[in-house]
Length: 449
Ligand code: FAD
Image (cartoon, rainbow, N blue to C red; front, side, top):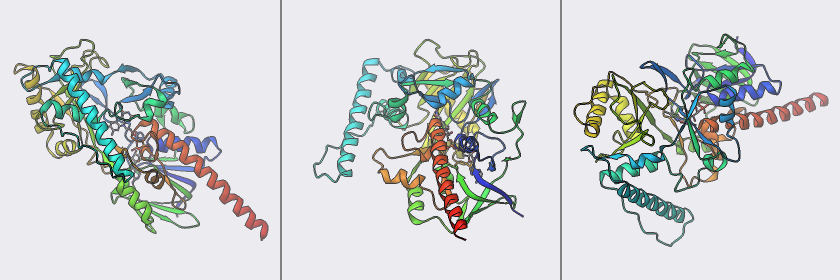
């Protein structure tokens, strides 16, 4: 016989856990949370590496210090999370060429300004096309030299705030804090979970949370939902909240019966998935500068995005002798497909170009694989800047008794932890309303009988 509850939540990342919390606060405790992985957190995930805790997924709390308070910053304060201030805008003044010379700051600043102007121009022309204007805008020059390519990469794959206002910074403030806590970013999730799940000694011991439970099918009708998992179990409920990533929705991991309507499938297909990979390298000793404003540095290579963006970990963990290099999209996928030894070799070659031949080899490497993780299939959603309002609407719109939540359903904060958190609240409010309406209808029809 199927396990029976009022609501099934699929996924125990920040959005799924927040949904469970809001349900509990509204008196709905009869829930079950089905999580495919062996722990909660989803894309908030730490690992012990080289003697410290590193964050494979979310690392920053972005958007702090503004008029409105970022709710994730509040959670971090409540749970006493250790963080450090972080500013990567200086990275543009630490750009190395392949012979280890740093580009003069004037040249770097000029190239940066050019890239921003060209991005603005491109946006305007896209906006023009979007509104079907006939005015033809000049096509901006495409970046060609290594420094142009490096800046183009940093601007488009990381920043864009100088080109287009980003809600996170406009609403919550422009500062960013790096989480540097041995308990991990996930500590704030455990703290949050304590308020509505049974825990003991920092462990969740609540039978409503089912780990290692992979949802494969969602059957739905006017009367309820029936969810089947990979281990052959069945879960029955009145409603289901799906918090799986956009990459998982695009994959064939979960099938729907009847299938999702065309408008929903199309929206899911049209949303881009970004892959973002932080590769950690451990060294026997430090050979890079720890002066202020040198935390981030850039390597200018003739291939766009080739081991471009670097950070040292001394501010977060002094003495850790660790570097992080970030790859995205095509480079992420390429590196995920090769052996870590090959990746280590490539990264060392780049580092020797920047710091000379005498630097020591890394003694260890950690390469997360978000793209090949079948419970993720990417790092976060990426709405085109001129995405029409309809796309977000269709992504989050429920289908009968199936509700959607997660970072990708957040209109203003998609791609961020706070986007996941706020979407968990929004979706659950919509569900609670629907529950009240359905209950009202049921009572009405009972009164009628
Ligand atoms: P998730 O955390 O993905 O939760 C969904 C859960 O569903 C997962 O636990 C998954 O295991 C589970 N699941 C999937 N399929 C199934 C299934 N079939 N059955 C059962 N369970 C299933 N954000 C920031 O704010 N700052 C950052 O610095 C930052 N950096 C990032 C760096 C990387 C490398 C990545 C990957 C993400 C980063 N993000 C960052 C984004 C942030 O991590 C996410 O937006 C947020 O954690 C998403 O939460 P979620 O609840 O929407 O999804």
